[in-house]
Image 1 (cartoon, one colour):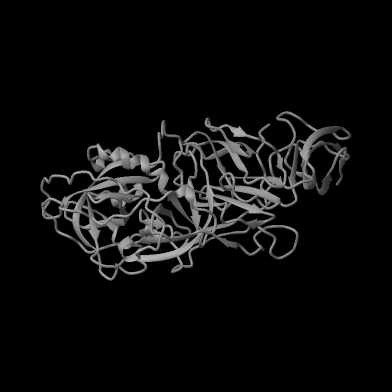
Image 2 (tube, helix red, strand yellow):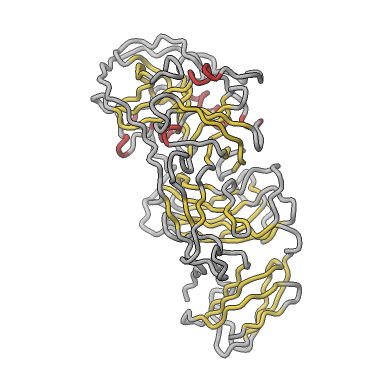
Amino acid sequence: MTREPTPKVLAKILVLLLAGVLLVGCVRLNFTSVSPTPDATVATPGPAGPADWDAVASAVVLVAAVDAAGETLCSGSGTLVDSAGTIVTNFHVVEPAGPCAYDHLLIGLADSVRDVPSLDYTADVHAYDASLDLAVLRISGTVNGGTASGPFPFIALGDSDAIGISDTLHVFGYPGIGGQTITSTQGEVSGFTTEAGIDGTAWIKTDASLAGGNSGGLATDDAGRMVGVPTRAGASDASSTVDCRRVTDTNGDGTVDESDTCVPIGGFINSIRPVNLVLPLIEDAKGAAAIPPSELAPTTTDPGTPTTSEPTITAMSFAESADAEDQPIGEAASFPSGVDRICAFFSYTGMGGVETWDAVWTRDGEVDETASMLQSTWTWTPDGDTWLCTGIADQAPLADGGWELSLYFGGDEPLVSRSVWVGDGHEIVDITVRNDLAGDVCYLYISPGFASSWESDRLGEDQILWAGDSTTLSLPAGDYDVLARNCDEETLATQTATVAPAAVIALTG
C-alpha cells in the first residue's frame, strides 16, 4: 500500500514579492575596444575607528544591465574593493536571464551622496559563483570608448567572522524606493545560518531594511569595513509585503485551520552573504579573462537531466551539525537544553522546476524569523541530499521548546513538516500502542502536540495493527496527538497521549 504523510492542518501562505527592480533612463552608447585598467591590491582589513560614511558611500556603485541600444533592462548595486575598479556584487544582478538578458554592463558612480550616479563606465564579469549568488566585475572602459583612468574610490574589507549577534550593520545601495540616489539603512545582526556545501557561515541575518535594488550592495560594520553583500530581502518598510501563514491556534478552538488568523512573517529579517565567501572570487578575478554574458551559467548548479516529477522530500532527520562530507553529527530525535543549534537533513527529488522555497522554523507554534529562510533561491540539483540549520555553532543556546521545520515550495501548504524537542525531560523511551478498536489500523500518526502537521505513518510499510494487537514504538517523552486510520484511510480514532517510560497508549473510538 502507498503511505504518505497526511496533513493535520492547512498552513495557508500568501507570498507577495517586492519587484525590487530599479529602472534608470536610456543611455546611447558607443562601445569600442578598450584597454582594461591594471589590477590593484585589494583593500585589506583596516583598523577599527570612526567611519567617514560619505567616503564609504562613494565606493558603492549602480550596476545596470543594458541592451545593444543602451536601454537599461535591470539593475542592482555593487561595491568597489580596489582602486583599479574591481567590483563585488550578486550574481543575479549580472545574470543575463529573462527580461535581464543584457548585452553590456554599465557602472554608475555618484560625485556625492546627494547626486544621482552617472553611468559612465563599462564592466565585465571576471569571476562568479552562482550557488553563492556572488560575482566579481572589473571596470573595463568608458561608455564613449575611452580607457577607464581611475583610481576609483574603494572600501576596506573586513572580517565577517568577527561580527556577532546584535552588532550594528550599515547597508548601502540603490534600491529605487528611496529615489535614484544612494540609500543607507541601519540594523543589527539578528543571527547566522549555515548551508550544505558552504564552509562556515552561509548567511548573516539582519533587521536592516533591504529592497530589490540593494542586491549586490554594501554591508559594513561600525568602522566602515565591508562585512557582507546584501542579497535577500524579506519585505521593505515601504511595502506591506509579507509572508502570511496559519501556523498557530489564534482563535483558541484547539485546531489550526482556515478559521485562524495568519501570522505575518518575513517582514524585516533579511539576509547578507558574508564577505569572507567572496574573497576567493576576488583572487580568481585578478588574472581571469572577461566572461561574456552568453557564457554565464544559470543560478541552479549542475542541473543534470531535466525532471518532470513533482517535488518530494523524504528521510528528514535532525542532528547537531554536519561534517566535511555533509553527513550528520549528533543525530537525535530530541536534544538537551543548551544545544546551540539544530540541523535538518533530508533527501529530495523533482526540484528541477523549483525557483524559490521557504524553510520556516517555529518554536511552540511561534515563528522564529531569525532561524527561518524565506524566499530563498533553490541552488541545489533537482535530486539529492542537503541540510540546513537554525544558526551557526557556538551561538547562544536555543530556547527550550517544541521546534518544527516546515518546507514550502510555492504551494499553499508545506510539502513536509517535521518536529523535534529541545530541552531536558524528552529522552527516548519505549511505549506500547494497543489497538482496542473494533477495526484494524493501517495508518498510525503520532505527532507532538505542538506540531502543526501530522508526521509520517509510524507503522511499517506493510504493517497492520490488527484489532486487539499491540506494537512497540520508541519516541521522545512528551505530549502527543494520535490519529488512527483503517486501510481505506477512514479515521478510526483521534486522541491525545502522554509518552513516558513503559507507557501504554490504548487506541479507543
